Each structure stands twice: as C-alpha cells, then as structure tokens.
Image 1 (cartoon, rainbow, N blue to C red):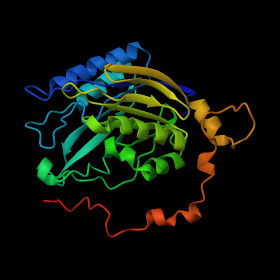
Image 2 (image 1 turned 90 degrees about the vertical axis):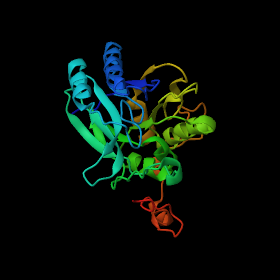
Image 3 (image 1 turned 180 degrees about the vertical axis):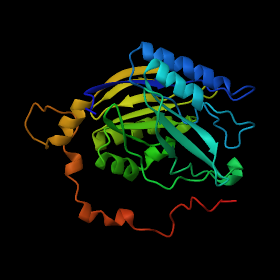
Image 4 (image 1 turned 90 degrees about the horizontal axis):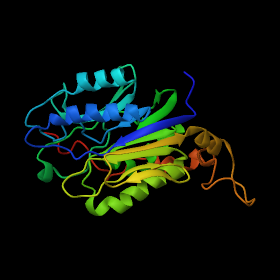
Length: 288
C-alpha cells in the first residue's frame, strides 16, 4: 500500500466513567468514532484503558470489541483503543488494539512496561508484555505505540523510529497531576529527537486538566487540556524530508529541528544501553 503524505488524527480526551456503569464508555466511544469520521479523520486514538475496562481488577468485565470493530467498519476509520485484560495465563495486562477501516484487527499489543507502582498501592500485579515496540502500517504509514509512561523510556521510542515508525501513538491513563508539564515536554522531546509525530492523549479524572497533544518534529500541531476531541493533520512528507537530509550552518535554515538525526547515530558506541544492570526494575518481582 502506498503511504499517505498526510494523515488526519482525532485524539479523544474523555471524562472517563468508572461508576456506576463503566460500560457506558463503549457507547460514548462509538459516538466519538462517528464524530471523528465526519471530521474526515483517518485515525481515532483513545486514551489508555478506554473504553475499558481500565481498573486493574474490574468489578465486571465488558467486551467492547464488537462495537468498536463495527464502528470502525461503518465509518471507514482506523481506531486505537485499549483495556485491562485477564489473559489466558491468569494475569492481568493492559492490552492495546488497533483496528483498520474495514473493522479488522491490525495488532494486539500487551503493554511491555507497566507502571512501576508498588503493589501495596495497586493491590493487583499487572504482567508485562514480552515484545518490543510494535511496528505496523496504518494506511501505509509506519506506526508504533508507547503506552503512557513508556514514552518516558527514550530507547523504546528510538527503536521504533529506527524501525521506520513515523507516528508514535501514546495512549495514556491520565492523573498526570504534578507530572503534567514534564509529560508534555517528554512528548515533544520524543518527536524532536526521533523526527516523528507523537500523538498523546489521556483520560480526564475529576477536575484535572488534560494533556492531549500532537507533537511534530518541529512544532506542536495541536493541543488542548479540556477539549474532548483534538483534530489535526500531520505532514508525513516533512518527516521523510527531515530524515533524509543532513544538518547545515547556512541561514536562513529550512528546518527547525536538526535533520538526519537517525542517520547520525554511532551504534557501535552505544552497547552500554543494552547491558543488563543489577538495579534494573524487576517487572516480575510482584508476581503472585
């Protein structure tokens, strides 16, 4: 499939429903998909755990699969959604699904780096996925996923970019609170250093201000702390141009971020990044 030159994104930043009927999130999600389609979006990105369930041990499990897939097919639009899932091995995982405009599942991605929160605070161990960042095509565009705090791990996004990803989807759970400003800086940094687009969105809890943002390699394309739907088109040809060029001291410059960064690497000097360390976080230490 020929890759798109431009893609129109719809970031959904909902006020999530937890009680008394969280399944209402599913019908709300379908209405968001319909609205995004009317706005000529190619892709809808929902936050982490939306339309859910989002809780680590849901009071009851509801399956949004059929309604989301049917809506994607009906409105001819790609959808990225996720939920907390009780997997076949008996453990909970946060699982992201990407559905194409025909209602067909493109990928199933169990979050590789669950939040490093002590089990005393959560009471439920969430198992990690065991694969690196997924790289797949949406309308021909190489895309990857970094869920919530995975965006703070620069090597993870860099691996996706080296694999060709031009768009990083970052569905996040929300409750950034005092981390909000730096979270948005991280999103911008990942886009700039990898010469790609980063689409970040989150659930709204209580009276907090959200961080929905589409960051490009040279500027913020769109952002809102309150809007439920954030829309913007991204220029993928610009990403390809920046990645194919080298830096220059000539003025005026034709770029606002240093081009060619992915080709400027010296991997032979970076072996330390892959070396194991004694104090690395153990994602299995709380396994019960």
